[in-house]
Image (cartoon, rainbow, N blue to C red; front, side, top):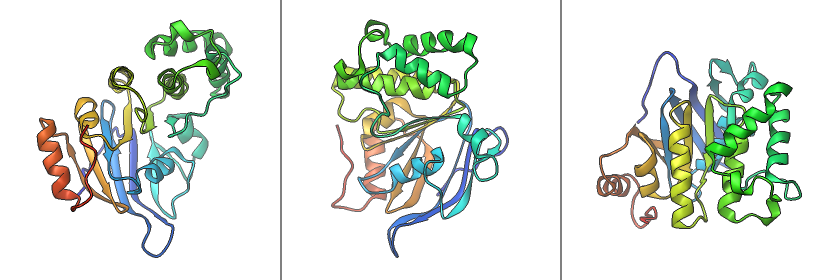
Length: 248
């Protein structure tokens, strides 16, 4: 089941397929998101969440299907499409020897932000991601929570239309997790966001939509349910026993 939207979509993916073997892969996933949509991509480990995000980000080419980002086709105008994407993979792309501010300035330049605007863009994401206290520290010295925030900052520095996050709260303690959720919620007001998670309460806290991927198929895409118990019941109905998503 999928939700179809028309007009002003910032992200549209149609019938994405990626085959790893005869039975494994992604099978006909379609998604569309507008500004303000925060979509939680739920599923078990190995369901296809990361593969889907890699295709949406343009780092993995689908065997078939179309992806459009802010009106630009990923196949016909890949550079323009990717310029409008911010992507945080499961392992943040950090340079440990650089200070946080040095790294973000480098990311801003790589994103071709005009030189006079680089510092203001960097200062903005440092504030958004609550990094002022570590801005002058080397990335190698940071805790996992701060490293995740720096990874999120690099994905946001160029003010992308679409933000793609692969389990951004993975491995964080409860306080760090809450901080990450607040940042995603705020960032989602101005763009379309897709983030993968296997935590039901994270999707409940942050998203206005959820999609469930199971064995490479999109089996549910709809508005988030009103409470965590309803979401858990829905997930357990969609994904057969004995497999269950984490409940914490």
